[in-house]
Length: 295
Image (cartoon, rainbow, N blue to C red; front, side, top):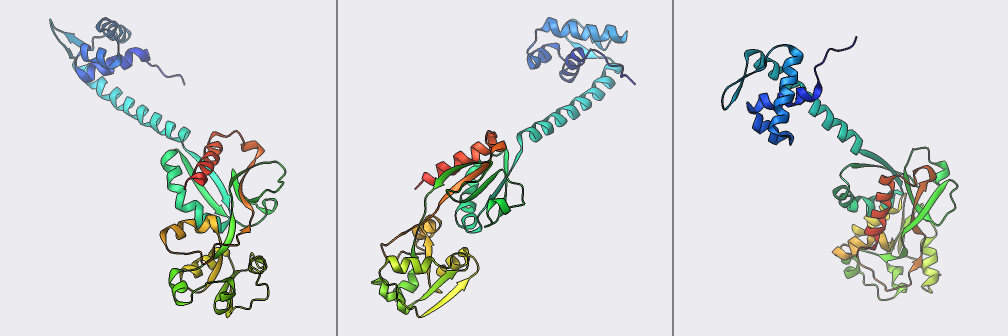
């Protein structure tokens, strides 16, 4: 059933004039002339076939019918304004699905994520973690963060952060058991990650002590657990320099040796081809590059 509605431009003008009880103030609010306000109100009155204002020499006042009508349509305009604001919020809000390696997420991404939210308040980032190859990931994502470079069909890959690995430990542990040379690791507990079982052996070969036997070893399921154990003074971990940089800067971890530093895979943002031109995706990838370059 069609609605019987008055001319909507005239209705908007009448509501402003009635709310202000003044054609002059309504004209100022709506950026119209006094004459335009008067003509629109008159058109509405003609549509109704009855006056809505009593006009005096220097002022206008609402009739009883005008008072009742402006109250009703004022509330309706308020509801329209609120619905319009909500619609803009829905348009501006964008959920960005990011799937990243767990250690990277905990040690690098989450501590920096607030700066992205400040720069892009209309983008909601939803993080999931996985160490699985992308071909095995079942979660939907707009951006995946993995080591690379790897050829991933149907994706655009962009490097944003380099990485090397070198031993790290807590300052307290180093003070109690100094490490002058790599051979001194024989007095320490070496912390291993089950996800990277050979990294200590590779470093010991590079440090020219391939036959070194540590005092003990502890193997933990994930790399981030070895870093937490190092922070707690349990032993010496093989630290990915990008992911321990904040702790080293804050003095929570130290590098007992200047080298050697093992080369490691860089961090890449992998974006499905269908999302490559998405403004939110491009904003996040640009933010990754910018933050990675920050000291």
